[in-house]
Amino acid sequence: MKTKSDTVKNVCKVVMLPVFVYLLFFICSGGAFGKPASLIMNLKQTLAPTLISFAMCSNMLCNRMDLSAGAVVMLSAMFGAKMVYLYGIGLIPFALIVVGAGIVLGTISGVMYMLLRVPAIVTALGVCMVYETLSNLASISWVTAINGEITTLGRFPYCLIIFAIMFVLFYIIFNYTKFGYNVRACASSQRIAKNSGVNTKKTAFLCYVVSSLFLGVAALLKISIQGSIDTPMYMSSTNIIFNCMLGIYVGLALEQYCNLVIGIFIGNFILNMLTTGLLSMGLSASLQDTASGIFLLVIMIFTYNNQRVMNFISERKLKKELVRTNAQ
Image (cartoon, rainbow, N blue to C red; front, top):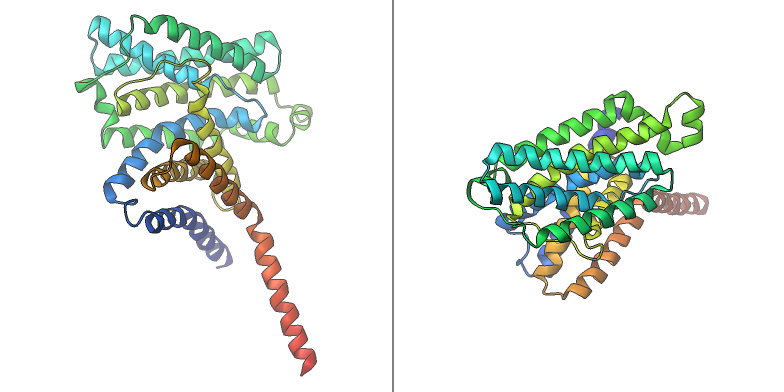
């Protein structure tokens, strides 16, 4: 009974956070935010960022920051768009090419990290700049927009089906495979994991390989939903991954109440609601960034310290009861 009760409490706490964000912006915007069509669009826009968060999660837990993830997504999508423009390929070849390009590019990032033996962030920056340069050179003649049948996978229910498959796949990989156990061991301590028999180098490379699959599918969903992809310039591809990183941090904050995979999805959904909510209130781009930062800081502080607050309240009540009892 206690376990069931704790589970119900944790579910309520996890659900309460997005509900709170929804109600806050619904009230502040005077009802302009939170219409059914808006929520559906928020859900749709959450799918690709969540897959990118899944792709980055294993490396981030092991203190490897893969800043090339955004460039992989953009270059993969651009390559698929070029094939459509040049050869008029159909939906299935387009999907296979985009996902395949993501796998190849993401794996190359892993190979470079293993070969160069320099800090992951240094390798990622170098790979990111190379991929962005290729995107810029190619964009002169590449058409990066798709339409018609090719965008089918970005529509309901196909995008949800693809996302659900990838969600279940990552859930299984992260929670029920040897690779997932090794990642969590490395996340706790690389040295202890290595002394315990974990092949840390192999695990690091597999993190990039698994990441590449999810980046490829994220690229497919992103260009299918948007219908186009921007050409990255001056490290602009990193803008894609920053919100995805925040989604991971929110997921880590919620991990005490739910599985990390579920927490990451909720984190990305909250971030999308946050962007839409601030837009509905008519804030400028700079003010949106400021408000987003403050709002996320408040959420993180509350999530990480809510137990302390509850303990403080309980202690105050207990002291009052003791004082009352002594007075009687």
